[in-house]
Length: 73
Picture 1 (cartoon, rainbow, N blue to C red):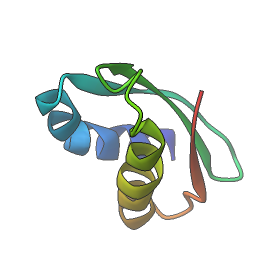
Picture 2: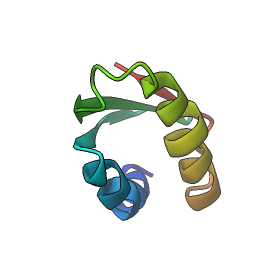
Picture 3: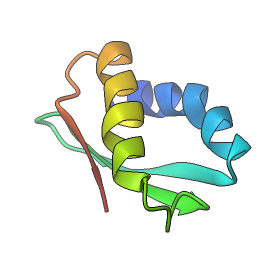
């Protein structure tokens, strides 16, 4: 599943990079929890939690079966 998650993140990476940020995959647990780290402008952005939940998590759930949650570390 890690490879599928990485591939999906690579698809959405240009959107984050347009705003000066990026996302790094940290871990994918067996129970479907994806841990990511936001970098660049996204790291300190007050909207980072919305980016995680409404953007990254929603996208990954549609692209990768088995993803249950995305959390920022």
